[in-house]
Length: 230
Image (cartoon, rainbow, N blue to C red; front, top):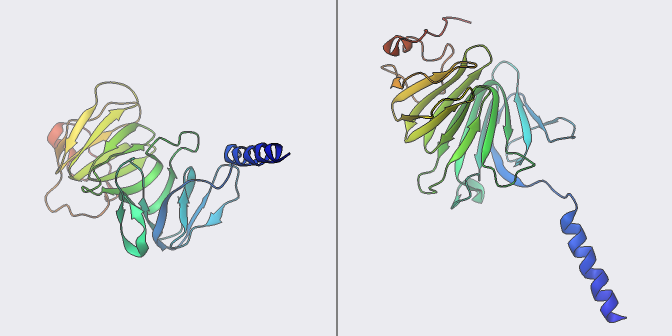
């Protein structure tokens, strides 16, 4: 009888582990400004507030006139560092303006990927953690290892500016990956290949890529200049 009870109890524990439970937390919202909302797969949309957990697979929308979101995440499968309010993190993602982004893949818990469908994002990986994060945009796959700015626009493609470290840029159209080092940028047009890395423009600061992005840079590599004024 006791043996049966132990087996039954063990079955309950194993069964509960196999059942879908609370989504894996992969980050926390450090700063939120104006309208930021999100939803998990099959869930209703909800407001994202400061200190809210960011679960794997959460889709986040930034709307309104001046939205902003800064997330400390634990992607990378490496060492985590303790920060504000004892949050442990390997890097941060800052989103500015109208943006849609997915944090991780709920079907692949090993993936360290942020999917940027549209909008601006600045990713800062902590050098002490020693890990990388992938960024998936409509036209490119990026592997980031330091401080990188990304702007994804449906018509113009993906702009990547590297402030520190380096980024590997792989166009979804194919071709060889391009390594972009600190102080340089590339653009991957829709259905196209990356331009040659070119220096960031003089006076460019640490803000997220401007709109229009990197205006005046593109002539250095003979590629089309991003349009002025939207």
